[in-house]
Picture 1 (cartoon, rainbow, N blue to C red):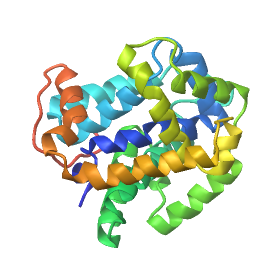
Picture 2 (picture 1 turned 135 degrees about the vertical axis):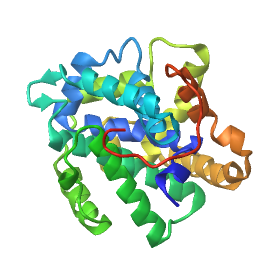
Picture 3 (picture 1 turned 90 degrees about the vertical axis):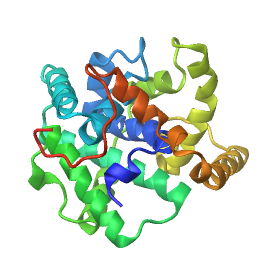
Length: 261
């Protein structure tokens, strides 16, 4: 298995909120997102753009991959805040790490543990995503054991301040947007909180209780029983819809990527 196999699964969107909150837990990222990303007017924009970028790299045409890579890098160039520069390689590494770790966490909850060979292949593929975002390849920890050490160090040093909590609240309680999105947010908030550690739930002031834990376990258990048996067309619907929204949009067969897209 490679990322092009795993990454098409719509269920990975369940980890999107978790990945964003982990990114916000880095004060530099959290403050820059609050100042530059327009969360209040469009709280799902960051997730949509991230998904579009990954989908285009693996399933889009070469022209689509080049388009989204240039779009993301142009958007990042002016984004700066005290202690944050969107082109800072260390912060690019952290953002990429949150995407990788959250995707694997959700996939293994739904499909079961990856084999070592599959896990190694997917880990290597995520390095390519970081490189496409201008992260120097040598910054990506050389193997999964090294990544676990990096991850543990980063989690031990995160700081969730009032700014990050405010952005997280906007993400999980969007003041605008279509009715279906706002109706879905209680479930999305439950899953996002459930996928975080107890320490980070507390840091983000996310409500939790034995009852919420039971509901979370029930949701994830039902998902693991039902989702793998859904038609592939449903499981890949978000990928296909986002790809078609890119200029020249069409869906192609999965392909390998390189740093230039």
